[in-house]
Length: 277
Image 1: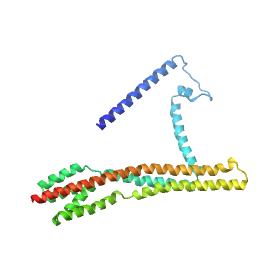
Image 2 (image 1 turned 60 degrees about the vertical axis):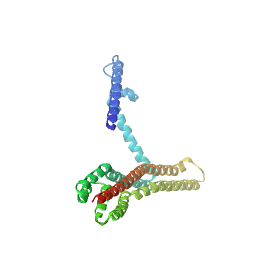
Image 3 (image 1 turned 120 degrees about the vertical axis):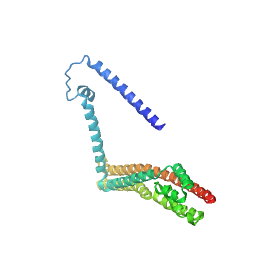
Image 4 (image 1 turned 90 degrees about the vertical axis):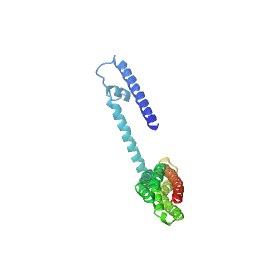
């Protein structure tokens, strides 16, 4: 259903784009019917007139806008001061690296537990404990690992299996939450660095006012600019990392809930198997 919806949306976008292109071509054709073949563009011509004369002007304009964006970003980074902006940038880089690694790990840890439980139940009925252990050994994910650790202690009783499942479940939970404290640290420290730059910038502005003995915009503009840029940088970094952090927390909660549910199901299956044998 999702694939069908995505294909429909893409087809609709392509249809709208094609129709708009056709309408644009028809408008261009009607506008250029009475025009001369040679079009000259002087230095004061607008971008629209340049685009009619040379279609590549629009591409050049987009490239200029992209270049200007990167140049403006670089300029703001320099104006904010490398001493303050570099730690904020490092928080973003390291935070994103850990967050992306966590997202990949958590997505790989998410498995189809219903399918695994069905395989475990079938293996218990047909092959016994050893066959079930083989199924869990060949399946990735924390749930299969918990199952395997519990089945390895089946000969010690169902109570020992339950204790093993609970203990190893805590270990798997720790692996799922690994690195999350570092992301939380970067989320907290990035705005702090920005606010620290704000305070230092305002102090520099007041020092300039005190030295000059008069309030002049040119004297305080530099300090205030540093204050604003560092604050904005720290808040942007914190917001970006917060999105990844909340996603990972939600993913971990879902995996933990599935682990608990699957563990209860495994114990029920082992109790039934023990009663039959």
